[in-house]
Image (cartoon, rainbow, N blue to C red; front, side, top):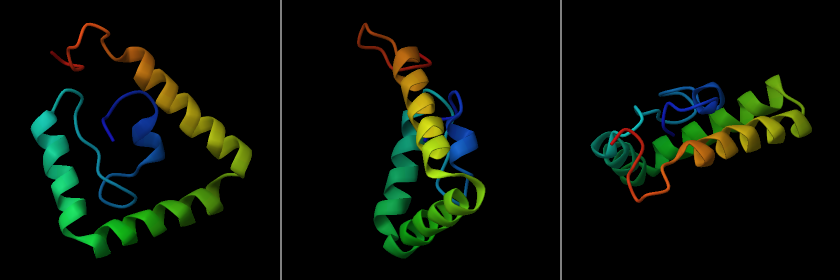
Length: 86
């Protein structure tokens, strides 16, 4: 995820996923390459995220948190074809 809105609260960097700075296309590409190149790492992070979600939230509040974070990210995105941070 990008360090935008509440997304870093949902994804713990290096534990439940990878967090990059807004507008860092190269960092995002590197993060995706890392996860695609290491399926075991991706699976461990996914499982860690599931465990964290189960232990810290009820499903309705977790879904609301993720939905709100994604909604704010979409709303913050430029509509003129630029990427955030340009």
